[in-house]
Length: 333
Picture 1 (cartoon, helix red, strand yellow):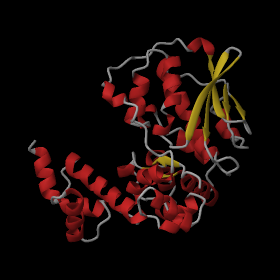
Picture 2 (cartoon, rainbow, N blue to C red):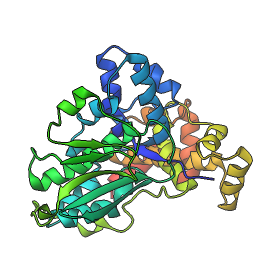
Picture 3 (cartoon, one colour):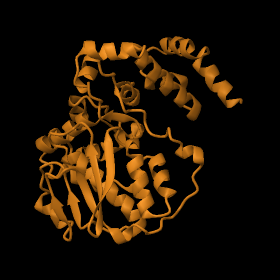
Picture 4 (cartoon, rainbow, N blue to C red):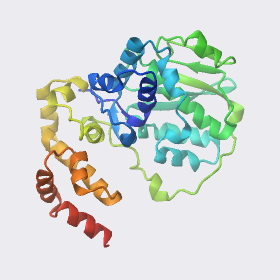
């Protein structure tokens, strides 16, 4: 049973925006790939990465979009990385330290993203690879994002105009002539051992704008607990709660296993899929009650309950109190 590769919904937003701008049936394309459609409000939630790649490829093919991965990647900026990831980089005194931290905390963005550094002559390769995805087609869409974010991180130290001498893709993919024209001094490689960009060794000592970050913010537990199937489900389910959660059969398909094997794995952990789903709904509701002024009835809908009375009963069962009292007591402390 393999892990379910996940990525933050933030990374699909520019693909959806491009589709909207050209008049494509964005919602239908997302639904066809069984992805949530209300992405903006779920930027920090997680979705199945391979289904996001499927969406990007289908949109590129059906809408005639050239180099969709690049078109989407160029809309992303450093600020679109998660707040914790930016904090890790922000407290690094040099570029080399920042890149080391990026490699350590890569799973803050994608739960199967592995990053490392390799020295080659007078430069460093910032390498990235999605674990367990070898041989899967069309990953150039994701690899553009992997490389672009490495570039944005280096630019925090080298300046916003810096561009790498080499951009390499693990996928067998060649950027269009139009895309290459935007990078006149960069060579592109395909079919590599990993995706990577080339950074001069002389840059490694470049100082950063060190920010003060609370130590508990950079605790060892800041990464998403998505390293196995149960952790992946806990990360993924919140993005689906208000739009119809995946069935057990769909989850098993994503994990490359049978329904029976998935249920057995959950049983060994003392869980059922229904219990995981109930916990995800409670956590989503509790977060909204504590951090927003959203009405209780809207909290119920956001957590996936069609009946507010059912929501109140379920919330009381999990917390011992009603949603309204839970919010009032938290704010009175």
